[in-house]
Image (cartoon, rainbow, N blue to C red; front, side):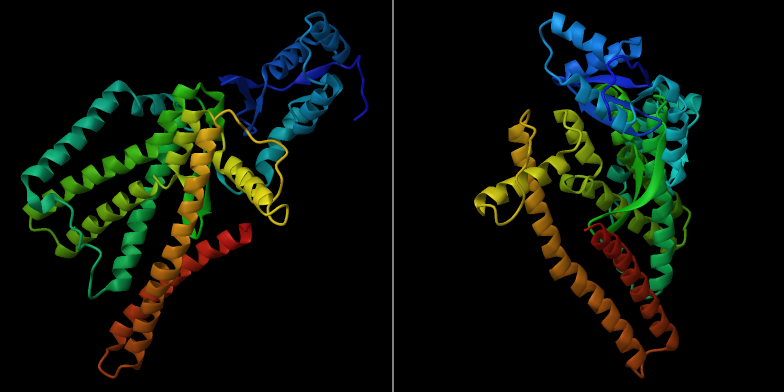
Length: 399
C-alpha cells in the first residue's frame, strides 16, 4: 500500500481491554481480536480523532517515544480491516456481511434481560440449593449414589446407545447454551458449531467476543458450561430418586445413571487442558495468554529445530517470553497429553471398537444367536465406529 501521510482514516468500532503490558483490541461483531502494545493503542486513538500519519509521527516524535513504524503499523491495521480510508467507510458493513456469509455455524444473540436473570444472585442461590439438596439426598440414600456399572448392559445395546446419545446431545446443547447465555449476559454474541478435539467430535461455542470484556468477567462464560453439567447431574439424581420411590422403570433408571456417568466423564475431560477444553481457556485467561496452544506449538518447533541443528522443526521469529515458565510447563503437558492420547487410541479405543465389530460378526456367524441379537450387536458396532470415524476424519483433515 502506498504511503499517504495526509490520508485520514475511519476506525471501525473497537473494544480495548488491558492485558499485561499490552491491550486486546478488536471487534466482537467480526470476532477479530489482536494484542497490541501501548504505542499501537495510542496510534489507533489518534487515527480515530482524525489525525493523519504525518500528524501522528510528529506527535510521537515530539514526545521522543516513537517505537513503532507508523506507516507499517497503519498498513497492518488496513490489512486486518480495523481502519479504512474515509471514502471507504462502507467497507465495514461489507466486513460484517462477509464475516457471516461463509460461516455455517449458528449465530446466537441471547436475550439480555433473560441472560442477566439466569445469572443473577437469586439464580445462583437456587442453583446452589438444588445441588446441595441433591448431594444431601445422595448422602442419605445410597441408591442415589453413582452406579459405576450403569454402562454395562447385556441386551438392547443399540437402543441404549441411541437413547443415551440423544440424551447426551441434549445435555451437550445445554452445556453450550450455558456458555452462550453467560456471554449474552455481558452483551456478547456467540456462534455454535461442530468441531473436534483430536478424534472426538464436540459441539463448540465460539466465545471470541468475550475478549472485549475485562479479564475478570470472562470466567463466567468460560465456566458456565460445566456449571450447567453439575446442575444436570443434580437434577438427574433427584429424578432417579423420584423414580425409585415410585417403582419406576429399571431400564430408565439405569439409563439416567449412565447419563450421570457420561456427564462426570465430560467434566473430567474438560481438565485435559492440552486439548483446548473449557479449562484450557480458563488457564489462558488466568495467565493473560490468549492462545497457549499456538504458543506451545511454536515453542516446540523452535526447540526441535535447535536440537536437530535445523533438520526438523522451524525456527521461531518471536516467542512470547512474558510467561516463559508457564509456556514451558504447558508445552511439556501438551507433549505428555498427546502421547497419552495416542497410547489410549492404540491400546484401548481401537481394540475396543475391534471387539465390538468382532462381536457383531460372531453374532451373525453363530447359529445360537437370534437375528435380533445379531442386529443389535451390529447396530451398536456401526454407530460406535461411525462416531469414531467422523472424529478421526476431522482430525486428519485438519492435520
